[in-house]
Amino acid sequence: MPNPKRRHSKKRTSTRRAHDALKQPGLSECPNCHEPKVPHRVCPHCGQYKGREVVEVVAE
Image (tube, rainbow, N blue to C red; front, side, top):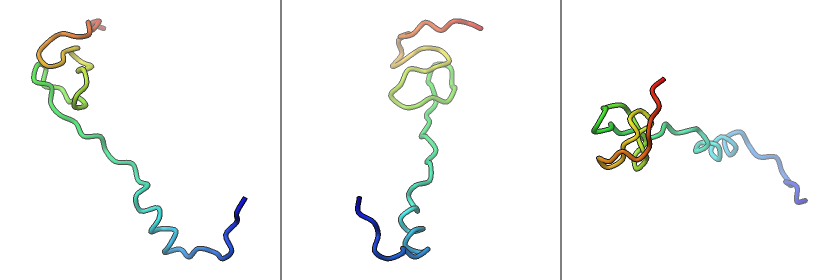
């Protein structure tokens, strides 16, 4: 296993980790029930995708 020959500075470490933060998922509004949903996915609230009912949602 290769080991670092010299210690990395704090700046170099934090520069590398600058893109490691979690990003918030992009949400869009369901045209049927107006709840937030992930784009290009079936709405988990009403079960519709592109105007058709794809998944039958059980009322809880």
